Image 1 (tube, rainbow, N blue to C red):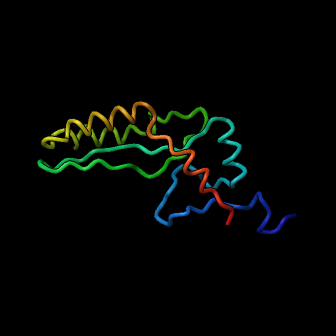
Image 2: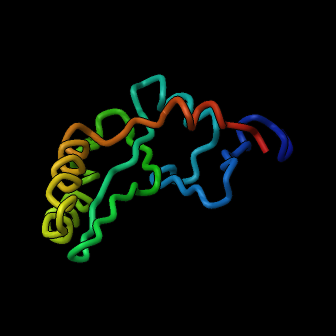
Amino acid sequence: MGGPDTPDKLKWEPAEPSLTIRGLDGLAIDGISLELERGARFVTFDYCISAIFMTFRESSHVYFVRAGESAVAMGLRFTAVSLLLGWWGIPWGPVYTISSVARNFRGGRDVTAEIVSSLSPQ
């Protein structure tokens, strides 16, 4: 019934072109809002990679974690990367690895407020 400008057809477009959100699976804004009301959230995960005297701590893309899904399970691959490649850098490898693993086991960094504030129908 409605044309392409009806609310059920609106899609979220990131304010930054480089921002990628994994797990939306083509949800329209109203679907995202419904999921957020049920307890979904947007998170990033940390990972650490070391090259002897250089250690890099980075954040993943943003992931949409629906209500009932485990953010800890979703972040396991980033935890594994840190445990395999991050710990052996001197001096920050162990420090960054431990902080990355701890954050990921707490469910990642919640960036829901930032993403929701940037929602804009395009």
